[in-house]
Image 1: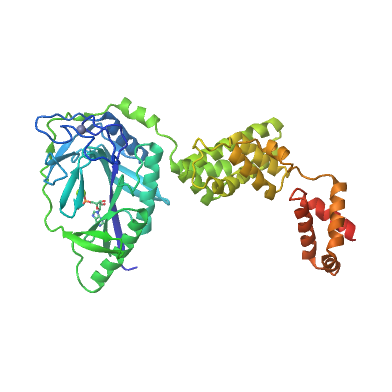
Image 2: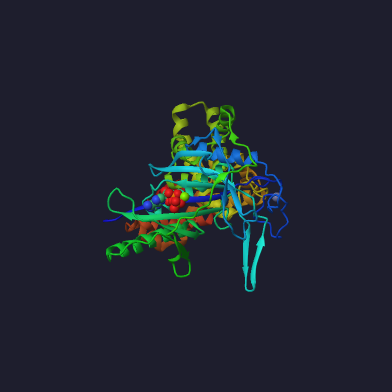
Length: 486
Ligand code: ADP
Ligand code: ZN
Ligand code: MG
């Protein structure tokens, strides 16, 4: 391609603290009743004093550490001055010259995407536009907002999409935000330009992208549009564009010819934010295993397919359930004290547990979480279920019946098998009777078999299997048919 796409992201995330950024009002951006979580501080009344929410600072520092940033031991809050009806004070308390976190990176498919900075600021109120005017809901005003800015290191819509998705996953692992894009808890603005050499081209900023899919689509659309502008000998205009979801295009919103002057200055009502080494290292110790490391560990410990690992990493609760099930096998195998066999069995059992969790169990769950109190299959019972299957004590067809019963009643798999009489028919005499019945009632297939048609035997085995309601071992049936037919 002649033009190289250059993309940088600006991502705002609402932090899930109990209270707002500078007052003790409840932090709940989803509160349905308007203007209930408000006070003189977040309403911008004169003479009030803000107080820094320590929990919010902690959450930004946590994010910064997880994203390999340098954490500032000395940072400042500043006033960003502008007028808008959603901003009662006439300024937003933000960070400018000295942000909390700088110079980090996030690796996406082995490419390091630089993170310029992460800072803390406050959310504005919500404007509700109606036919005859606009209403303001201040519940959202003053909610802690984290802004992350990347370097222009991203080169495609796909990569921007993957970055945003991975970031969301990390924020959820860290427990700093639900980061739900549809609910506006995570908002992604993209900056995109084209270049031919080292020098960066004129960028366009795209706003109101409310899903991962639209980030990718809007960028792909914009890259084509800018290519056409340049190819026709024109210049890209420095502007803000919006995504029109109906028409699936970007549209010009306003040109950026003049830079805003926000007249930033240090917030006089707040002290500098000073963090000790101890404070930072304590937070460092609280960082859980992150998605990237989890992928590597799942591969090394359980030898699963990448696609399956991805599902367990994305659905953290399902991944944790899988690990609990596997740890039950460990106990079981340690009892047997046989290392050689142990490793192969362990691998097979883990694979089988993963398969059953991702297919049959997920089907039964139908969107319900394994953490829901109505989910009643203990990890121990699930592990037992998988080992019964592994020992070929039931067929995969019977397994479905057993699992469904376990899911509905929370029962132990061996109890289900006993109660429902699902035990394998092992008595060869009993089976031989069934086989000979099938032979005498399927003479046509018997003829076919004798004439060398291999699938005739499979048909006969299938008939016998149906007769035993799936409780016979296929290999024993095959042995008996071959014996009686020859
Ligand atoms: P502005 O002053 O317009 O806010 P910044 O320099 O603060 O611009 O950058 C904002 C975002 O735009 C960052 O994510 C940055 O990586 C990205 N960016 C900067 N220049 C370009 C460019 N020429 N093309 C694409 N993205 C860019
Ligand atoms: Zn308040
Ligand atoms: Mg900027």
